[in-house]
Length: 202
Image (cartoon, rainbow, N blue to C red; front, side, top):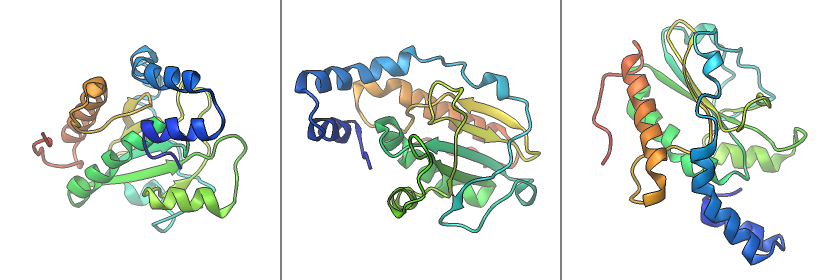
């Protein structure tokens, strides 16, 4: 399970990749955030949220949309070998801690790479990172790490195209990640049933 961009470097080196290739890949990561299609998923805004049908549920009883009506949902997809997913992992947990009592439900969906695997290893890794579901993502998107916000009536109101978002970390190449986190917080503030506005961490 990749825990950070630096952890991804170590994993690639351990796999036998040439150090020059690995360093080039790590150096290109911030650029890949800026070059991706930022409008990916915009076609889903205003549509009804898909049903919550996953291969397995963890850290919760199985959920469905109807009993969650009246709450705002943040659904985040991620994979086990994606450094951007690892970098974003604290963000949904932080939002859950700050907003769940005020109407926000966070659902983390683990996407096994390649063909779905039903072994204990990916399930254990997903559970340790706070995932609640294991499922298959929409492969028509540029990234599997998409997030979307669903309003209290079950309609998608915001899409994040994927990759990474989190609060301020001090790293200069993470400005877009911080801006995206602010945008998600702003959308939660705006949606009835999400939360009352609170100050973002500095």
